[in-house]
Length: 306
Image (cartoon, rainbow, N blue to C red; front, side, top):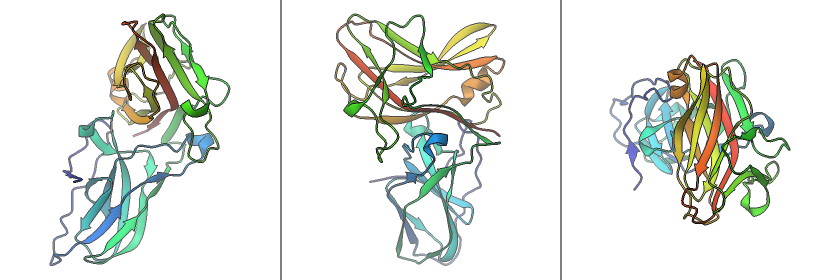
């Protein structure tokens, strides 16, 4: 049985605030129902990258008042009738953790104007979301999809292996089969101990003021992997942020992709005096007991100004 999440104030994770909940006081005792099974993203590939997403929840607003967040698929009771403005916003598990659910702050909400709510009836909604315009307030800072011929990741001096670009059944493919043919791959064998790559670019303009900044990626792997930041503040420091768990048993070449949203905003704030940041990916194979596989695709670094 799907559960209805208790509305809480979102913490610093995304630095957003929400209006208080409306109880819809009045004589109505029989609710109308909204049914949401799936969500979709529509976007320009060359501006925003692939339309891959892992939206798990629907944040529902009636006449600009929030009534709750619901895990999908959901049938949502609404104590309102007649024409109302209904707004749906997508929700995610920040850092892949179920207890840190939040609205995804980079999409235009799906809005239904004058939706006729009828008590004891069900309206099925299929929200399609688009990204905010890339411009003054929202920024697509970095995309790596491994399909452009040039890879914007480079091996560090401590890495035993280099990144491979692979296609075929092991690669991630967009549902339309148009844009994405290649994915990044690392293989650690019994003869190799460590892989580590970082972005070629030094990001000097990431927000250090507390605004939402997200690193997103599709991945599959047979062992754990670390995602972190290099930053320069006099010296160069390495700051591990997120541990990626395996998507299959150790030593097995994985075939199941997952997506994660990693909030790096708080780490930028902690190191606001840094002159630049670089994102890195790293894993060790200290056991030397077999081959480990790591695949990445649709890497995005995006943020929204306050």
